[in-house]
Image 1 (cartoon, one colour):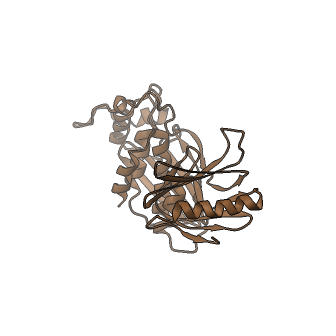
Image 2 (image 1 turned 30 degrees about the vertical axis):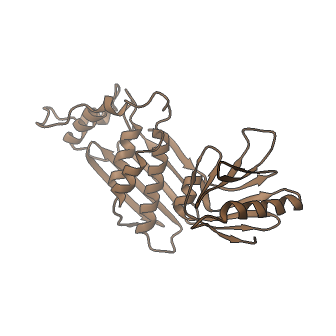
Image 3 (image 1 turned 120 degrees about the vertical axis):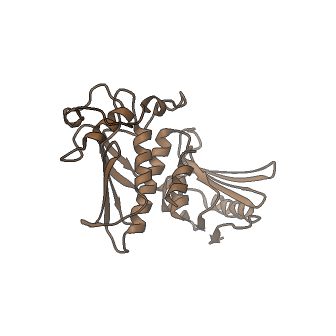
Length: 296
């Protein structure tokens, strides 16, 4: 399962996008390993060359987890920067009731008290850097072991020119999913068999927060801004006089960059909310596996 998800992540548009998706995947694997009732999960990956250790703690107590090696290894590859190498430690924390995460990566401090010599050589062979930290140079063997890998650093640096944002190798990392937006503008369309409802924070600002619900034949699509969207996993949509509330699967929430409950607060005239109710029913009515509509 983990391998299949990681391969899917590799189709993300940029290294930055794929790195974010991998951190979300690590969170899912940590949640799957923890018994219900936890408050905080912390994952720490320490790695030099192939020598690695991953620890998962549930509210301060270490627990076992499976499937974490591949996403962390891929995240190191994605993070590689020419002349600077990649990170040695990655720490991520997840709180109950949120899809977000906080954490830190480090590319200079030693991740282990004792670094094996073959691991140090493999690190500098695979992820070369112009100024290795002293502890890494000290750990190098006096003679190179037979069968060490060839240099792959250039391979990891061969990315589309438009991708300027690899995952960081030092400093803080954080993701705060959206929980709400305010809607003051509403629109709808029915063109080329595609039905659409559009909500925005402002009608006068192209950079404003935006939300789309589209239907085409028996399929639907929900999208936010330029973040992305989903054609599945929207469990229900509830409409009242003050808000449009989306209940989402974790996968759909991650695709939209939100928590599993996302609320569009409606600052619209009553008659416009009535139009919105009719329009959403029109958009989603023909869909075979449409979200449950509540309050329509």
